[in-house]
Length: 222
Image (cartoon, rainbow, N blue to C red; front, side, top):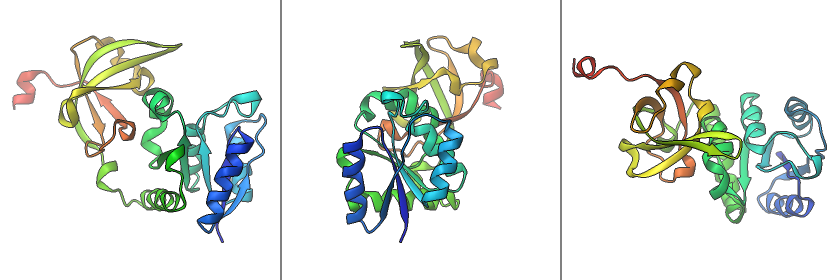
């Protein structure tokens, strides 16, 4: 039976997820947390489980100095399937989750955490780890228009329009996703090229990779 690590800074929430995992036929193992690096957390989880379900906000009372999206991304890079969950998806998906979203295929809100959805999310993660990319996760080269640049707390962010996805809806992402050599281009109305999963149906599922400077119009025309 697959053991799944439950990483959550709220003991009651971790217990609730554990019961759901048991209903789904898995064996839960609650990660103890409390300090340490994300690398140490990855090693500890690999010693005790074959997969993980990670709450995003993990900083309460010194439980961790990293967030769940980073942990999930690093676990996946170590061939450990991981699901990201949060009751704050609407608040966090544009910046702290989006920073890692390209590497994290499965994101669930708390009220979506049911036995069948967890099974489906775990299968999606496993498929992508094997190179089987579903349409909603497949990236395409596309134009991104800068609608605004501002600060969210201490983080500099971009609000952008992706015309090929939805020309009427802005999407937020952290400036750190864009290479430093392109930062001088980040002005309102400017365009960049990026790889985006254009078939995503929800804004929280969008990710951005490999930003480029667009070619001049005459070169684009040729």
